[in-house]
Amino acid sequence: MFWGFDVEFMKGIRTKKLWAIVGVMLIFYVPVLYLMKQGNVTSDIDAIAIIINYVSGMALFFLGILAIIFGSGAINKEIEDGTIRIALSKSVTRIGYFFGKFTAQGAVFLFALLLTSVVTLGGLAWIGIGIKKIFGDVLLLNVLLLLVMLEFIAMGYIISLFIRSSGTSLGVALAVFFIIYLVIPAYVDYKVYSHEGLSSSELQKLHDDYYTKYLFFSPAAQLKVIMDKTVKEVNKSTENGWETKYEYAGLSSAIRERSVNFALIIIMTLAYLGVATWRFLRMDLR
Image (tube, rainbow, N blue to C red):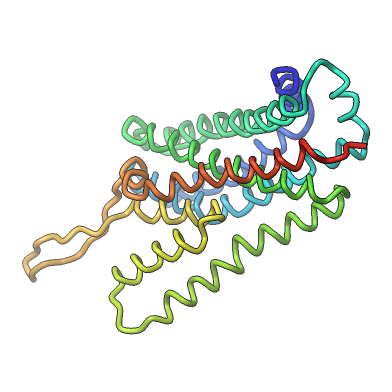
């Protein structure tokens, strides 16, 4: 396992793979930090809320595509090139090679996310926002992103192991991603909002329940449910009576409240890895 980890991790560090991931992530963060600077955002709570909203939307979309593509060529490309037979001729088992490779690819994403966290915190300090209170949330946000990326990579592994052509698996990976990220959630949203006579809070609860029950296999959907809980409704007394306002609750609070969704991300990653491992141990690698 350690041999497979060392080979894959060092290959990721030495090639353009890691730096492409870092570059993509920085492209996502730099513009939003610049816009926050231009918009004179000075509140630490407003800043982290903006970043969370951005990351759970556009950034997650492109990072999810990157992760599933990353996994979809993990095994079949090496079978095509013949490198996997050379690797397994060493004193390493199939399962050691498989988990070493997966762990190393996860470590590449972790390294990229750590660099991104440094840039994000540095950018927030640059625009004049105190990072002491939101330091933990920035790191926790990237931990959540890493877990989601690992699940997408595991999905890609299944595609890579059932489709021998790396070119075909790339197309299938993109199709699978768009179906679970856009098509099925759009249908679930339609079913939720087709209920009439419900208040906004009731619709939100129904939305969260539907995403948990029917989109348990989608890491993006589970992350969205968690992110939605970073903002909570608070009833405050005013001169004109009671008024409902929204406040930032924090990521740790959101994870505690939506612990089932957090657990689903981990459980489904293990399930996908289980399927991929079963296939890898039984397939002909010639």
